[in-house]
Length: 192
Image (cartoon, rainbow, N blue to C red; front, side):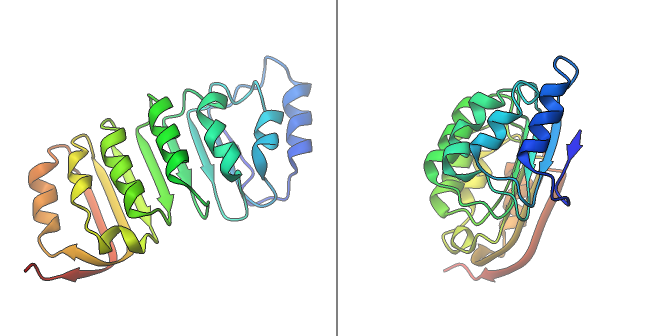
């Protein structure tokens, strides 16, 4: 595992480490933060990230639209994708869900309602979904998340108004594998 999320390590320094240890540097997990940006930085870490199973891009780190589109090709074995404070388009999500066949856990900030629907229909094998700061998501309802039958862990945090008061009941009845549901800082609405 490589965690540089709370450091000022540059992509050039990482590339030096990776290329200075050919064959010995095979990463399975990486956490990126301050100072890490763009697809070029990911490219500098090849081939160490080809077997990557988990990637977290946190505060101060940015992959950008092109890097996120190319993420499945750069890291085809990914099982966990956690993207904090990233600007994410529908195209990126569609690409991630279409090509990361091993994806089991997806955590994201500030996604649209349309992306929630894409997640629900594009990756039935997801066992963990965390959606945070997605005000539009619950304003339009979260019923499409009930199509993800494999979900064991569902977190909706500070996602605005609109969730039905009965959502927890429906989630428990529609998601047979659900073990953990966390609804934090949400406003419920009364059904008509």
